[in-house]
Length: 110
Image (cartoon, rainbow, N blue to C red; front, side):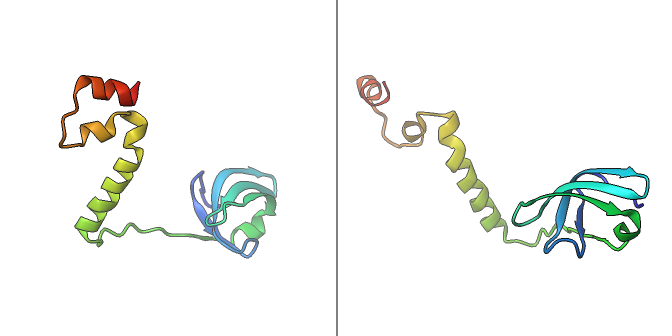
């Protein structure tokens, strides 16, 4: 059996889509495989003969850094603003060009 570890993505005729391995254990002539399908996230828990296991293919994932840098920056900023309010409850006031008076802040945020 090839050295396959947790996090590896494999393809095989047992499943309609690639499977991400969460746990794998060899016991005798069989391999216990626990994972989830890549797209639909369905749980997989199967015992497969080692002879069948050699027919599986590793799904190669290659990182592609050819995207437009401006679009990547805007996507990251969108995510940052989406979660900013979780960490800064006064985000609207801190990003505003208007300086509110102390009693206005107290009226709105208290």
